[in-house]
Length: 321
Length: 260
Image 1 (cartoon, each protein chain N blue to C red):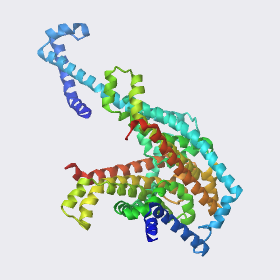
Image 2 (image 1 turned 30 degrees about the vertical axis):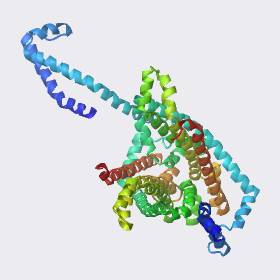
Image 3 (image 1 turned 60 degrees about the vertical axis):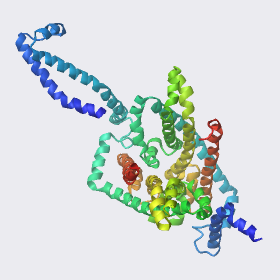
Image 4 (image 1 turned 90 degrees about the vertical axis):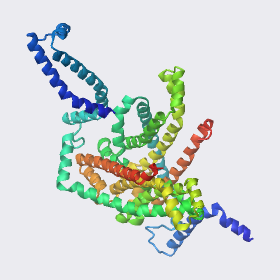
């Protein structure tokens, strides 16, 4: 709505200014004197040609539109206020050297080092490694988590054997286990894979078992009426019924995978974005650290956003109901 | 006779305990028959000795206490800041527009990724950890408060408007009671998050920082598997106990709401 009106103003703006300019030109010629101020305008309005009158009207219209635009402008100004203030403060603090430049690099330095890292391919290398790990961890975590979730949700017997232990494990975040796992698994890829898989399995298994248990009774009744059994029941009723929950679980799982991967890479790794960040910190290249922080945030956001789109797409069929 | 066995077999407690017991037996056998190196999996005896050893116990308990003292300070600051920000964003659209986008952008960064920057800015001492814990604690508080205030039922607001409530009265009698459960849940989350954030910070910052996380990290570097195991168990148990206890609070506080 707001965007629509802004576009309308943009479209009409050039036309109106031309109108106005033309109108005043004509008016000026017709009367033979320059318009000085507000006081002669009423008089002018009477004496001026109809074209001049039109100009005044369109000027008024434009004015009204600009006034309509004001709230929008002030809204954007509000959005920009805090980030701009922080940026300004940052820029001023580094320019006035409140802190040594290796502790507070200037915005320009950060941008330049981002460009350098991009050019040298260092970023794409480390980020690529991290993302590849995310793919591996998610693949493992999703297969295990789905299996566990379906088993926990569908079989009360399995739930009674495994469920209590699982619910204890849920409450222990993967990060807390890192030192122990570092001793058992070493600091190789096995460790990262294990921690990522654990981080992904838990929300996924939790949510998918819940959503299998809570499939709308109407679905199950329909299945009973249609005498669906075994495979058909699972593929046609249970799985689609549980799909929304599973999609949410997947999204949570991937978010956890990313957070725990960054943690592991910071603690025990020789490559990847988390490693690049800790290493740059050790050699006091805080500009690189800041670039890494931003990249970690952007990657996390992109993963989440992408999965959200995927989720919406997968669940489109539900909209038709 | 057979029915009692069948009853035990079917009881939830027996089944729930089965997996942990099997794992413990496996562990015992693995260490007794030396399937794995004692460096990786310590024998029970050694673990009990370590647990009874007064120096180990002192180190662990002192670590726990110092972590907790920082946790409480950081959490208090974080909760206060989070409540302010959450209330501001929830009550005023203008404030939401000013702070909201920045908050949501910063929220995207995995929390531990702030540590390298914070150690550079605030050193590796208590200050850095307190600030880090405060940041971790404020995140759920801002979200919970904001959501709680924004989801005040429109009917209630209308009643308040009909009664001619001032802004302050509206806050006191309408918005706060309706947002209270969300806020309490958020506070509960804040405590849990900040516990694990404090531990994570100590892991990442390393051995020199004091607190139970750094004790565990130090033991890991010296291959004292027994201490690592005890420490991680202690950390996990503390988290679970906090979780359990804190969950009781809203149940008690919001009895008046009846069925949630």
